Length: 124
Image 1 (cartoon, rainbow, N blue to C red):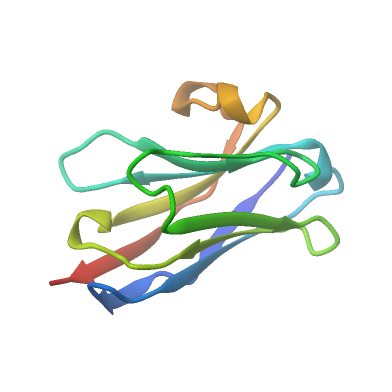
Image 2 (image 1 turned 180 degrees about the vertical axis):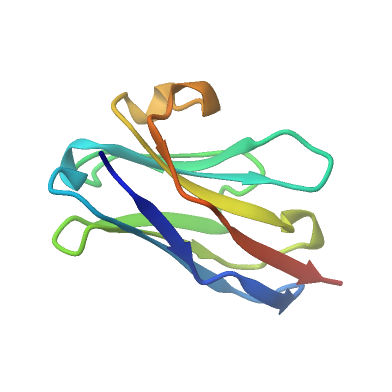
């Protein structure tokens, strides 16, 4: 069992930056591929970024490539999402999730564990 707790959300102006963190409990954090997803009001949850167990491979949605960076620290059982050059369309609840698949096979339906989310609001 893995429990995930996100933090770092908040209100930021367009063009600004935020760093989200996701702290995981449990002894086997390093065996999970970790992903960030988001869900805007009235929309379906969508993939944002993923990182492999070792951190050596990453994957991003086209909408965030070049602006967001995912990283992880297995010693701290934590995964991060650095978000730069934020846009109003990035406004959403951001969720951390864990699964056992390739970063290129990440899907909402294939994740095993989810956090409760943290709200990011980008004002124009």
